[in-house]
Length: 149
Length: 442
Image (cartoon, rainbow over all chains, first blue to last red; front, side, top):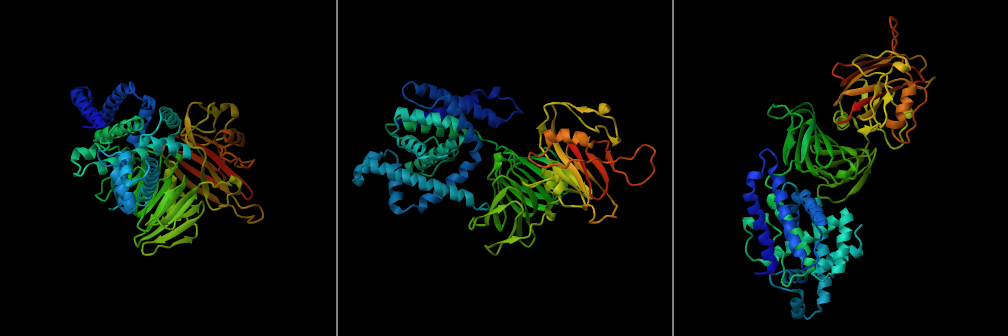
């Protein structure tokens, strides 16, 4: 099991357990969503504090800002994910191959570079470019998304 | 602005090649730059979604789809991804906690508006994504991001989310503050993106879409988003479902005249009162409409910060009073200001015409005070006047003196509920009648 996947799942588990455990603290009539969000955020922040001991991670203030913003944009995520699916399919086959290889489980960019007979640096650059293309494509899709679909 | 440096830090963070120094620099930048934060979130979400897509061959389970960003790990994880993981992890947790969706908007104003079923709309109802049918009357939706959209029935509007609606048919007017720029109104024939403005969109039964910009700018493209063009204040277009061309048409606001004032807190005007919005080169004295008493919105939801005198506060008919007897409005009240004006023809153009022009106006909120005499108009202009607008110098309305039976005086009557003002002005060639109405802010 990859260490950080374990971490992530751990936190999700802990957050939902905290929610169940603290459910009697939830006041009926207040927004469940807000309360659940608070629990999730606190659990994640605790996790971050632990992680900070051995490497640089973002401070609480920024994480809270990003979390709040993510919440604001939550409705947007599904549309973005649909757009991404579409945009990935539109990639030229060589780019598609590279992205799929670099992002597949257990892969590293180095191992892919070696296989492809390229320098890792070159692959990083190609990845950067493709991610930017995908981002642009997603923005276009979101902008013109067929709302009845 | 998204520059190369930021892009470089984000790329390195995602590629796990960022040094601790670079991570700190990225953090500092993100802390004080909200645009950079959005950009960063988009990048990490894309990264996480790619990871999720290519890292497992199986169909995502239902848990996986509500915790979309938990699977972002990579082997030998280092600084960059630790950050991406913790952020996207939170995104996943938030998605998980989004059991019930926030409403997109609330119904903020209703003027005799009914659903197809015959039930009435009421103020304060939440509006989630979905279809909204208005069989008649006016409904104003206030979106969470600050966008105001008034629908005039018969109309059918679909709320997609807090930044996007689809108008199937009917008339809407939108007032979009800076916080909601990018608000979209789609129709079967056009895609309208607001760029910070006030505008109207109507869709007729035969599928014509008309767009009319009252203030600011919007971008209009055909229904596929192609052929975008900029539409400025005072411009109008018409688009057709079966055609992808967009035609410029004459600026004609009449179809929006009922809905538009509701965006500004004016529920209704009747008789010869007409609500208009001043343009950028607005000078009240130059506004050429001699048939109507014009209502201009001035400053919205504004705090005077010092107390000031008004001519009239209580329900009843306005009568002249001495300066020292005039009531004061307190400094801490938030008010919205409107200017009512009758501008008669310049002298000589129509020298013998004498008419009375009358009507009534109903506001969404109670009227706090009315100002009529030139001295108080000037004093309040400094606070509530439109900045840089030129206001005329001498204006005074003539109320009927006590016991005078002759015709031909100006009259203002504030109704008992304080929301409706009856206005009658006598046309007096070459002179401008103006009063300022201060209404409690919405």
